[in-house]
Structures are given as C-alpha cells and as structure tokens.
Image (cartoon, one colour):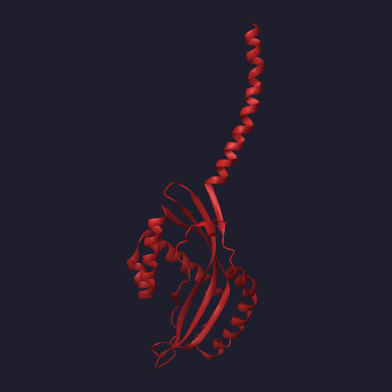
Length: 216
C-alpha cells in the first residue's frame, strides 16, 4: 500500500515535469523547421526608400505617350499586374523544366541564363518554390531606338518575391528579396506604329545562395 501510494503521488509530478519539456521541444522544432531570410542590404533599403518618388516621376513621364500613339503604350495598372504574372509564368516553367517554352517566351541569352540558374538551383537545393509576388513600382524607364533602329520602351519593375527553398537534408528557408525585371516593347518599326507586346529582356537575380552573410 505504501509503495502504491508513493507511485500515485509521484506520477502527477512526473507529468508536470514532462509537459513543459514537451512544449519546449515542439517550440524548438517549429523554430528550426522553417528559417527566414529577408534581404536588407544597402541597395534594397535605398530602392525601397526612393521607389515611391521614382515610380511617380516615371509614370508621369510615360503618360504623354498615350496621346502620341493611336494604341496607348502605357497602362500602369496593366503593366504592374502583367509583370507579376510574367514572374509567376517564368517560375512555373522553370520549376517544370519546360525550357522549350522558356526559349519561345524569352530572348535567347536570357533563356540560357535562366536554364543555367535552374541547373545551379537543382544542385544546391532539393526544391525551390515561388510563394508570393508583389509589384512595388517602376524603378527606371528608357525610350530610344533599339539595335534594329525601332523606337522602343524599356521599363524596369521592382517586385517583392517570397520563395521557399528546401535543402537535401530537409531544412527549409523562406526567402524574401527584391527582384528588378526589365521589360521592353517596340513602339515604332521602320515603317509604322507597332506597339508590340511586352517582353522580358533582363533579370537581376537568380537562385538564392545560403552563406554566412545571408544567415546573419
């Protein structure tokens, strides 16, 4: 009877000790299972600081083009939505390994660049998944003849992108960075007004590389 009473008295005490330990273990697991990295270098901070004014001035500069061409070449809302959709499309084709569609969609040097980037990503990570794309504004614009002497418009859009990277050992990283993608459309060819579709001509970032600098 004495031993039974002792075990009954000790059992709740053991449970009380085990429960906090279990909560600590769960908390530790949840904290280590998903790591987060938010890009905060000087270029990123400067871009975020100056982008509202830059966007306002660039948009103001482009609006008069709509009075010059019979097909208005500048629609800020459509461009913003289209740039985010273009990012999602490229990411989807890249993740699927559909390089033939990428070659049809992009200029040859850029499609080769993205193929090489995907090769590096597959070597470094078990998976890379796009989670979110948000257009933030126009960074730069250019209006000038291209290499074919066609009057063309280049617009660089800033996009906030969140991706998830998973290592071969199962470590997950949620990575938030700014991407600066440049789009081009031809307004005049050698004969007449054209106003072509927007095409991606330049991207500034590839696969995220985890190192001691990024993890700080």
